[in-house]
Length: 439
Image (cartoon, rainbow, N blue to C red; front, side, top):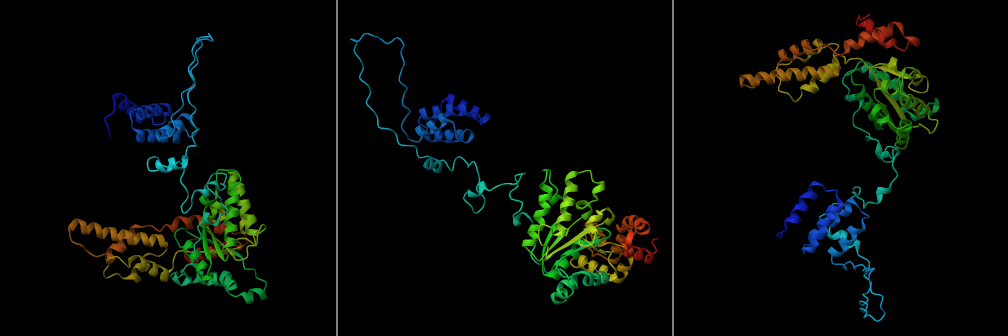
């Protein structure tokens, strides 16, 4: 950089302290141009234009700095000019040809590496997509299928679910068999649509089962939760619910999985949020298929507290079938434990004994048992300096220290099964509680 005057150096420091001060930056550009630093003057003028795109002084200075015609001086006005006609007059200056329009595109290309663009074009485009209409909250077209995550038909099948044969049999009888047999479905007038509510204690694999059902049907999978639907703008929550089902209809066959239905479809009588009540109303409309055919759209929902779900969602024709997903049975616990121990250093582990010691544990509890046992062995190895394997003692100790997370759920569900079992909705739960002597 050439030697600069103290004034230019002072102005540079002032501009660095106040980058948005356009007049100050233009003053610096004028001094740089006068000092013969045209490139530096172009940079300052271009930066000024990013802050004030319509500034005429910045445009004019840019023209001069890039070699355009200098600004023509204004004609002087002199109120004391002599009025004597005989006085000699100065001949008018020669007329200069008009300056052609300044090539702004060439100027932008020249300073492109100095001043970043004011707008960024979308990937794979040239900026034309910037004028696409936006939703009320500025997120983009919510009706576009790309706005929702659609998983392609997966490889997870019910055979991948360890144990839980009762759940599989009920799924097959109540849901999957009619869907797999189009001839029988046509004979008996069964529509290719359906709704199933999975309920039970947390951590017992309801989401995994829903994915397995989608795999059995060879259908796409879309998971929807409250955060995907609820919106601060009036009317947008209902629009989001509608867009979910419209997308599923376009991608049919498709499984729409409504996770934590007690939040998304809570009882409207207890809801103080008008947006949430309206979202439930729209969900009822979409389940009925009033605005579109739901042929090929399978609705699965999961909840830990079905008694908090709006009763209208569970009437016939909507989520009319329910399936209790209980803590994993012995074959399921063995499969889960084997899965979580498959890549850990273990020795002399008696899975049969460990399975019996973890009765009532959820799948998440079993994963926690394996993690805790691994942590104990790791800590001992770090303290002694000798790596040791995970043994049966570590696993049984972890199982004794961990209280099944399903116990509080059964404590709450017990009252519902005993005193609010209208229409036999919770007969399966009541039978399980009697079997386990939890009544």
